[in-house]
Image 1 (cartoon, one colour):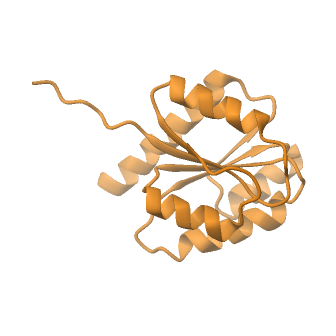
Image 2: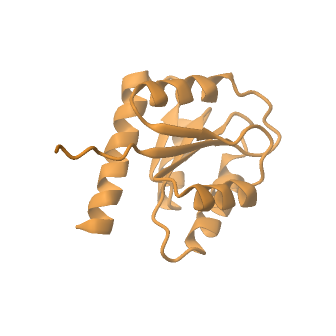
Amino acid sequence: MAKTATPLRVMLAKVGLDGHDRGVKIVARWLRDAGMDVIYTGLHRTPEQVVEAAVQEDVDVLGVSLLSGAHMSIFPRLVDLLAAYEDLDVVLLAGGVIPDEDVDALKGMGVDGVLGQDSTPEEIVGTVRQLAGERHARAYG
């Protein structure tokens, strides 16, 4: 009997007061169409709520979409909260409207990847798969 691969589990979240979620819902659809299990937390979540949900749902990837410009204060908090779970190895992705000049700083603080507002469906799906594969290789050799 052939082995079946477990689909990647991806959580998408909107943190803070950003009330626009059309883009993240489209991304969720693209990832679902690519065969991934996708959980969307909804609007106006706190970093604590998002990390707790990611832990409870045992996700491979946590993608946080921000359009509000608060990414340089929200992502350090998310990184700290995720680090508090010693055995947790989740890919953290930033998405939305993020200036190019902030990408290196986000990656330096522990964000695994940044996907801007102009990212194509192929780029998003490919990045999620690549980073999740790298995570799996680190965890399981």
